[in-house]
Image (spheres, one colour):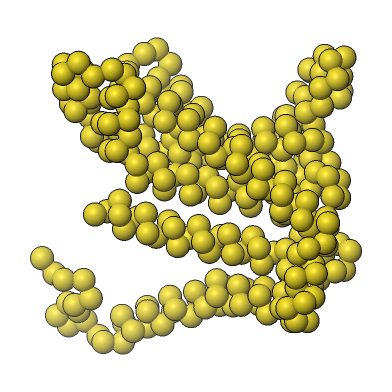
Amino acid sequence: MQAVGVMAPGQSAWVPRLLIGVAVGLTLLIVVAPLVYIFARAFGEGWQVYAANLMHPATRNAIWLTTITALIVVPVNIAFGIAAAWAVARFRFPGRGLLVTAIEIPFSISPIIAGICYLLLYGRQGLLGPWLQANDLQVMFALPGIVLVTMFVTAPFVAREVLPLMQAQGSEQETAAVTLGASGWQIFTRVTLPNIRWALLYGAVLCTARAVGEFGGVSVVSGNIRGQTNTLPLHVELLFNDLNATGAFAAASVLTLLALVALVVKAVLEGRRAA
């Protein structure tokens, strides 16, 4: 078997060098340069101005709302992903294929469309709007609406990472645990969960990154009320519209740092998963 990086007989030396150069050049141009520019603009007026922008009440509220949303959405999607993957991988039932398709729907629907659907369902003039208003319940233009649309957008990430692994591993170990008298909870915590832990963590990281950076769906259901219902991505847009470029880049740097941390964790988990 030919080793990676070894040129085939007759292959010109400039071909791999050209491909590597093109890959590195595009990476620097498309990925690295924008990241450097974000932090350069964020700190362009000094650390004190950067800190002042982040400590602005509206920015702090946006960071807090984004954090709360992620803290609610990610655990719910972890539970949903495990349950859905377990049902599909371990049982045969009518509608099994439909369930798999339903899990993948958020991948094919624009988040803006999802936001409009929630607005038409839970909004004041929506299907459930009169009932919600009569019971003094507000879903749209409040935290519940933001959580719902973010949960919809991020629903597939954990399930799609865990399901293939559970299908590949089969149920032999769980069946053996049953014959040894283990309870359902013992089987899950001592057999199933250890076998899927890296895929589960990988999916949770992807889910967190998507939840923190969601813009389209949240922009529809939140109302984008400054200091109340605008998450960090929405707040960046508001600052740009206010011609506050330094503040916008400062807020964007927080999102960028979160994305970079997610990428590092993702790379580590991929290595552990492969091992």
